[in-house]
Image (cartoon, rainbow, N blue to C red):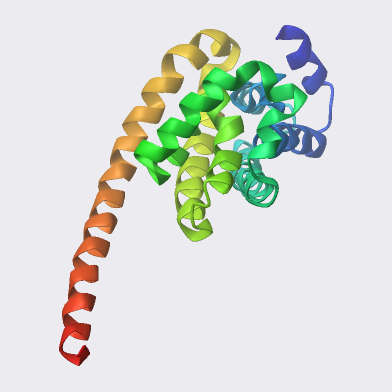
Length: 213
């Protein structure tokens, strides 16, 4: 990765934002994560921000979060419009076992899988398209996609920024822990949201009951 870091360091600040954001976007939209995982690009961008290569950690984090959410939305639309046939394309033929595992996760966990899938390289690339294929409502997908993109984008940008030259060690050890700690806080809010929805449905049924013949 030193060669990639050196190449990025030779670019101007705005170009670094664009390159990192593009890597994140295309990983989610077109499965490019098989070539270079998005968190690697984000962590490298954070390292450069720490080294003052004309990169602001704030603008970088914003670019990463927007790219993550937008890329997932494009991936969702691709899955929604093209359906299961995209799973038979050449780049995905050798990953059928993992695709099956991702599909099973969506069936069992629903939108929560979209959130947690953001923190696993293969799932991050595939989960948006699989959510579209499964016809998950877009508003539900967008909520969990945005929460995941915000948590992941901010988290890995800061990992790179504070890790500095030690990013290779920190990426693997901190990444999962960071995801679980922040995700735990987010999930509490999501559980409350789900409980309110469930309570609202019986209320709606009781309101309509007397009008039925």
